[in-house]
Image (cartoon, rainbow, N blue to C red; front, side, top):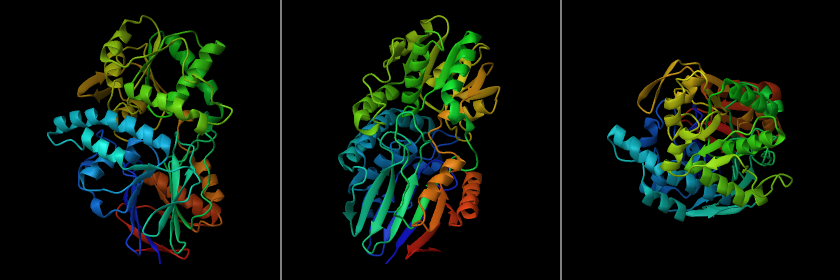
Length: 457
């Protein structure tokens, strides 16, 4: 008996998490069903047919609610999948918010490309109707001799690693995204201690993140510099986790007098909906000492849901902070504000998360003086600042510590969910420092996992 693993996404690229695990009795378990995002908001592979038969899948497990892990879920229903979809309860609520929000964006993109939308609201409804929630640390039978076990990864609310076990005891795990522990809100990521083969992420597999040790201080200093410039502070918002953490920290900075009392606008209906989910599940999933009522609210915060409320932000004179989606400046309301304010020298663009190659956010981070945003060429005279300490991903050293904590059960690590250089670097470190076999994931390749051995097919 054995398990077969195939990389259909998340190999040689950070986004598009999509892995198929099969056993000898015919079970086919899909781990994640994410969009590939990059130079275009959504890359062409996302629109193409699945490289497997959706109707033949036995089960689907979703690790967390970012679009590059769940974003093609509704398309899977269109393609004929009728089985169950397993995830944690917070991931279910967050997935509903992000998938419903994506329907309009997908419709706009499809119109621009002259193609049919990736999916529509009815497909989102079908996806949500097939979800069955699973708690952390619960062994769950998901059919045809396969069970699943989820652990917290400390990445976003409800994020989980997935350990699969075949009837004969063969085990494989997908870490998915591992959090930048210690987190402001979430418990530390839990190592996978019961899998003989593990696919580990590598977003920051080739670099360290020294800023995380004093990230609160750096945030205060960076905002103080931006305020001194006298202009608008733009913060492209990653709606899940990053926005909530930054709201919490900005509120503390204002309360402490580290920065003055300036208006903060959360101009993202999705981020507002996500914040409500965080408030709902915080008592159960946050660090016990962290949760309190109205954790993400403070007197100078304004949430703008409607377009009319959004337009009124420009009327606020003087220095202000605008947090708006999307996090890589590849969609959402941030594009409107970047077109309006990036040409001004007093503006500060504050980047607080990973920027995929080719996205407007990456171009701005790299110092571009002109950038195309939502079809319009924009001159950039603003100051761009990047805070790396708020990344939601473990760095090189954190990933190595995580891998070490998975020993001695883990005999082989596959390294994926990263750019090629990051994958190769982390694989080499795992081999050199831990003396453990490490294989760089390549899209389309398959491996057989059996009795502690891994064989390329």
